[in-house]
Amino acid sequence: MTARVSHTSVDCRNAYELSEWWKGVLDYTDLPDDPNEPGHEECMLVSRDRTHRILFIEVPEEKTVKNRIHLDLEPVEGSRDDELARLLAHGATEVADLRGKYGPGTGWVVLADPEGNEFCILRNHAEREAAKGPAE
Image (tube, rainbow, N blue to C red):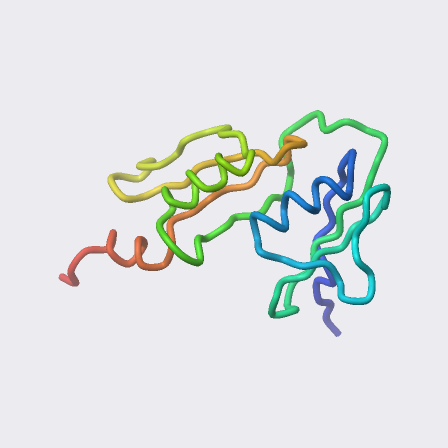
């Protein structure tokens, strides 16, 4: 027997506001039969291909330490740096810039959403391939 991930849950102070923010990051949508509305204590988002869901759940506790689990995002269109600029303009906060950590053209940037939940923006597939250089 095995299990599968039903959805990713995110504890938060305001489920509706944070789910709306992440919609703009991921291009996810509300569940067709359960739209999210202001005041909802639980808000579910689903990817457009319906393969991943994220549930935002209101909790009374404030975030106090670094996340033990987080999302690593890969740009669908544009470069890592293009996506970084988009996310900063969308309201993300830069936590750590690790671009170039393993040499030119490598690395990632750690960001935080409006409630302080960390996530990373990685290089896209083409950027990773280009950094490999020609085969020896």
